[in-house]
Length: 243
Image (cartoon, rainbow, N blue to C red; front, side):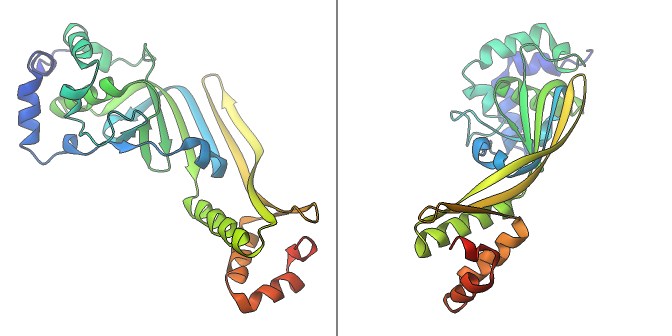
């Protein structure tokens, strides 16, 4: 590339940091923690993966790396543990950040609904790309190992509410989430899996279980949260056979 911003960033990061901190810009945003993917992926109605994907680097909001959570992206130029090495690589090969090919070593991003996180490798390079592109007017970084999940956080809250209510009122019962694969679309280098989310309520005394949909679980939560409706729930609802 013919831009010389990379030389200033690589050779004098302190100056770049000072200039950015004096501005009200996106590079001063605080790095957010990556959500617990092992928990929330059970509530994902789809999962998309691509071997080499293009991402607006300014939409990356957080990281899985605990040492960098709470810093700003511009702070990473100083605080990143391997930043000196990465800045020297920026100085010698700035084209890396603009190339279309799969990134080597790999950079891993995961998008959860509308937010993108660094889910494994790429913390230093993401921070550098943000700073570099802020100066050059670019925004797309290519060749990312990319995952995306569509998660219903209201459903997670519903599940947690019902689990707590059952524990309080019927401690011999429990609930778990079931994710059933519906179909997969794919060709070489990408795939998208679609899922149905449902729930299993189990009565361990009776050794019986039933499966309920999210819509049915909403009704169950409403009824068992009302003491005067709890008897009606047992008498008339779908779960009367196991309660």
